[in-house]
Image (cartoon, rainbow, N blue to C red; front, side, top):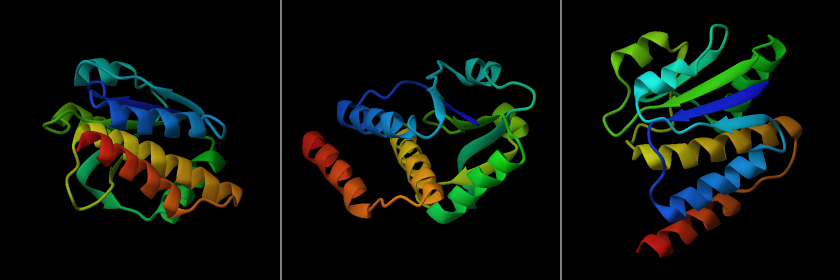
Length: 155
């Protein structure tokens, strides 16, 4: 199954971009991953094809544990979903067209994150989900290390 991440805009913060790139690289060992930064919602939605399962990243979406996300991915692999698309809206969130197209809405937390950070956290959680599915060890200490490293660079 292919994973497509469609964020509105590019990550401008170098530390956050490094984190996102690291997890994208790690994730590419488990799944075919494409991250396509888009200028606007219209461009992003033009990348979503009929038959894709689109997940809208939205603060009002359902919350899942990492294990639940792994089960969600596994269920789509079993049912033959060809492409799982994760749509990340811009600074103001997703507009009604994206909300209407979404097959599922997912929240990373009840807290609100900057859209750039959402991309990095989503890629980390996708990577974590695949390690869970493969039964491989992955500790929170690795994620905390990257977040700390980025924080030091920002401050």
